[in-house]
Image 1 (cartoon, helix red, strand yellow):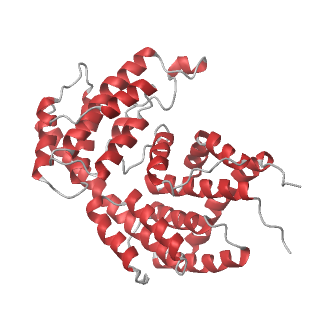
Image 2 (cartoon, helix red, strand yellow):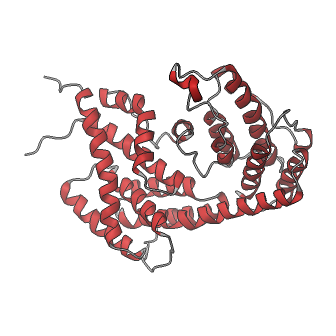
Image 3 (cartoon, rainbow, N blue to C red):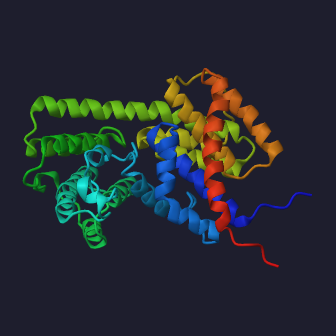
Length: 369
C-alpha cells in the first residue's frame, strides 16, 4: 500500500494551487512567467508551510486576499483592483528600489517613498470618496481599499495611517502638487471602475466627475476614462462567468470544494453587479449544463481552463480521481471551443506545481519515529 503524502507538503501544495488560482483569476492569463515570479515573492510563506507552519490559503479569505494583492503588485496588479492602473504607473514600493539604486540595495529611496505616499495616497482617498459617495461603506469597498493600500508597499507606519483615514467627500479631496497627467488619468479610470462595481449610482459617478475636474483633465480624457472603465467591467464579466461554471462542472459531486472555489472565482473575476447571479447559482446547487454559452479568445480560454485545473488539484486527488477530473476538464475545454486546450492547460499548471514542490521537498521535516 502506498505511503500517505507528507502533510506539510500537502499543505504547501494547497497554498501553491491557491496562488495559481489567484494569479490566473487576477490577470485572466495562464502565464508561466507570472506564476514563477509570484512563487518567488511568496517563497517565505511557501517555505514556512513546507516546514510545518500553518499554510496561507484562500480559506482565510480577507487576510489572504490582502497578502496576495500586495505580492502581485510589482508583477501585474490584479485587474479586479479598481486602482490597478495606478500601480501599473509605478505607484508602488512593493518592487523595492528602482534604477541604478537597485544594484546596491532593495530599499526604496526617500524620494520614491514620498512619491508613492503622495500620489498613492491621493488615489486611495479618491477611491474611498467614490465608494463612500452613497453614504455607506460596504465590505467590497473596504476590501478594495485595503488591498490597494497594501499594494502601495508603504512603510508600516504610513500604511496604517492611510488605512485609518476617514473617507473624504470628493469636493474636499486635495490634489497633490505635481500630479502627472498619466497618473491623474489612471486614478480617474480606477474611480470610474469603482463606481461601476455595484452598477451605476449617480452619486458615485458625480464624485468621479468632481475628481476629474479637480485634476484639470480635459473633458475628452474624462469621457475616455469612463469608456475604458466600462470596457474593463465587460471584459471581467465575459471571463468570470466561464471560470465559475468550469469549476462547478469539473468538481461536480465535490460540493464543499466546488462551492468554496466557485465563490472565490466569482469574487476575483466578476464585478459585484454581475457576481450575484453566479453566487446564487452556487447556493442553489443546480447542475452546470455545457451548452457553448461562453465565447472566449485563446488566451482567455487558456486562463479559464488553468484556473479550473488549479481548483481540481487543490485537494491533491489520487491518480485515478485525477483521470476522472481530466475527462470532465476536456469536456469543458471542448465546450469552450478547443478540446485539446484542456491538456495544454493541465500541462502548464502541473509543470509549475511540480517544479515548485520539488524545490520545497528538502525543507519538509522528517516523519516522527
